[in-house]
Image (cartoon, rainbow, N blue to C red; front, side):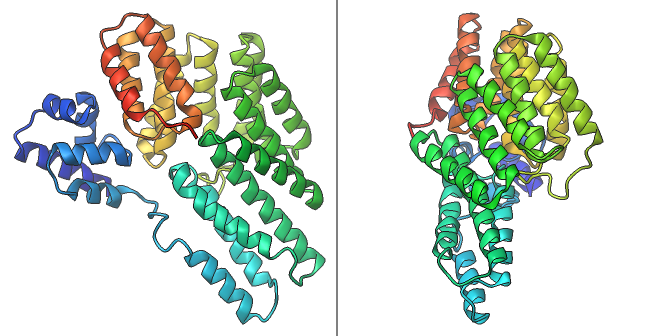
Length: 393
């Protein structure tokens, strides 16, 4: 558990006779961040950070084992083909090319992967999605009813959409475009407007991170026009519209969209599986507001970002969102002139190893602003930044 990791880290450091600053220097981390880890106020960091701490403490893998125990999601490399083998067994036992039981299991597997998305590094989740998509494709020519065929097309659409999202996270543009096209095509065949809307929203996010704010605005508005009213895709596309307006510097339109999103979120019940990537969680509205206000340079951004961070850290189960929230806070602090605190928050965010390649531009933006401000902490931030910089996809 997380408490076990904190206790192991604290005990090992004291056994080695290292101060927080000495360990921080050896592991290339911020000493305040390590102190918070020891106090159990932070979730266990990413594997790269844990490995450096383990080496710095000469722990022989004990800290790595403790960190794995703190992770609620099992390692996806364990028995990687187990789910596929189970699907094939069900298909054979029912003596049918495609049985309802096979489709049930395939749909549940797609849901599990969508729920794993928030906590699993994209390069680890991608092979699993790829195997299931290949298996789903192998069933397209098999004997089945029209209803079963539609269910298979729909689950193939969700898997293609998730695979495209993972390729975007890894900055693999050609593969992402190909699988977005597949998801859109399958959505059209199945007349599934929510998948079609999610494909547009996903494209909006992709071009937004690439700096094409006008196209992001257009795509997010098209996604809202396509999505079923009040659906998760509609909510998410609304959030992306707000981000696009913020990047375009239009605070009036940004405020209108955030107000609309907050109103819709307030009427929406909490989903059974809030961690599911394709189920909109009303709690996300607060996080989106923090990001959007920070991008818009709104003075309220720092306060909202701190509130979001406090909420996420109480939950503790969404390390990627926590890291992103710290970048939001960093950007907001820069707007208010607090470059030193912004650098500390950004260093803590990057040091978790949870910033995916598609979000790396945000870390770059904070680093550039901290260096331009001439903050003394810029050198330490640059060091952590270079250590974690993702390789080209």
